[in-house]
Length: 160
Image 1 (cartoon, one colour):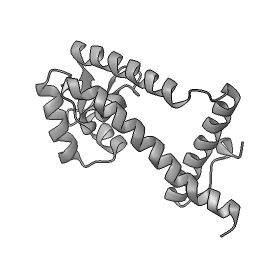
Image 2 (tube, rainbow, N blue to C red):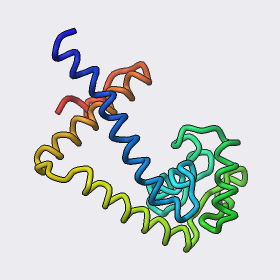
Image 3 (tube, rainbow, N blue to C red):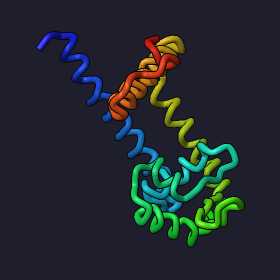
């Protein structure tokens, strides 16, 4: 195996290891709140929506689980008072999820924890290297997305 091929092969392990270690540290930060990884991950994904709400089916798709599995986690978060299910104004079949005030406060803590972990993770790395790493990882994500779709990378996601 060439050195270049070895580096390419290693990148998958490194990305996985960094992600796994960060998740483990985040798990530790969420443990006092009684949240499992599935629960905090669901709350994090809700933050991706501009208004902090989204359809239950969209959230399930975003986190990569089935509707039944998502429903069980949602029920636990709802019982904990962190989110609520609401009807959708335009489609009665759709259940929208929205954070409660307690959910918003916890989400703010989660953001603080994430920022702290990011600072620890990137300590000593010059900003220009971080910017390049971000562009490279975004490109890798686009490449894998295109491979998953069996298609070509859109022109706006062309090489750096």
